[in-house]
Image 1 (cartoon, rainbow, N blue to C red):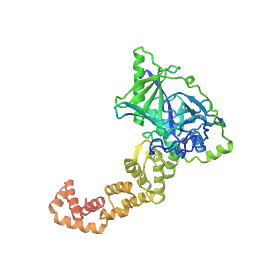
Image 2 (cartoon, rainbow, N blue to C red):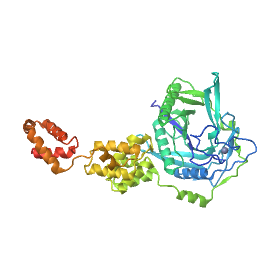
Image 3 (spheres, helix red, strand yellow):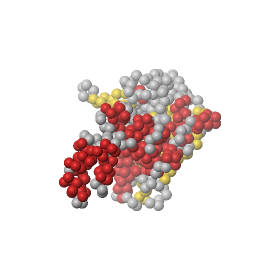
Length: 482
Ligand SMILES: [Zn+2]
């Protein structure tokens, strides 16, 4: 394996967050709608209808191109990609081929070894999604395929990298960063499991030092970040083993089979000329004026890299903590707003990257902060800081706040979590415990440090478990002259 280099290029199809579809007025949010209810003559592909271009989809794609450091074409065009498949209503897909909207950019991310990596973006273009097929069994046991046209015509951005990714793990990093940027921009949910962020890969291997690329194999059906990493690892190893046996690599499409953790051949690869691309005659060329471009540039928010640098600088956070917070806009905002409401910086950062991540992180760059608002977090942390509640109780409270949006102070009262942090009261209780436990006191004074535990236990019992343990330990040690 070490004699070989892995070369990976990724193609991501991200569903663009728009209200309506790419070329008609049907609603684009198809996930929860009953089958074939979001359809019209245009997305059904009936003859004699005319499509119109969705401006919001174009704008969000241009913003993505800008965020990925691309050149934006002043003049681009839609093309027809012709092929026949039951999920393609018209017999062609409207896409962009010769003149894409965005070209020649790059994406920076941290490589697994911590070094900064930059991978070229070949193009970002717009196209429409296909219908969805369901393969089922009919009442008589026969295999049937059902078509749901709701997804047909939903806008997709295709983001194509240069073949510059060097390992499966690096591919995972690239995808995580790309998804974070799309989510920061608000142009896509990036939800891989729901199909809003799909990834295909081209994988080839070559002996180290060779200039020419090896024969590339396209890998599909990877439905999670983990699947991408596993599939690409498997595929690279498969190709190396084949070359070592003196075999040739076939140019083909292979599918990842999750259950077997293998890729299997699906079909030999088609070439671009198989699709008979030609300009879409029903749509005008797409012209992006300088003024429009500047308007869109001004709409781009602070992106993850800038955010993490600023968080580290403004709040004095270590680089890795700032990077974790900036991974998702939801956590970066929660942190900054909680700090603005008086939450201590380090505590806020630790509780978010610890507990909030544990409760709501569903993958790289995706953290659902639930019902935890900056006000609620600041209130909770203030109670921990003042010793009103123990850190252990605070974890339970946070989990409940996360789920229900309850107010922390009310929860603490309701559950009786307020701890005894009153020094005078604790000292009074400690004196009682010391009087009643002469043997333990003698043990401690004879050097048996662990006997302190028995005394602390006495304090806890006397307070119904509500003594501030840290404070009680300190006062107890002071009383015993330790
Ligand atoms: Zn429609």
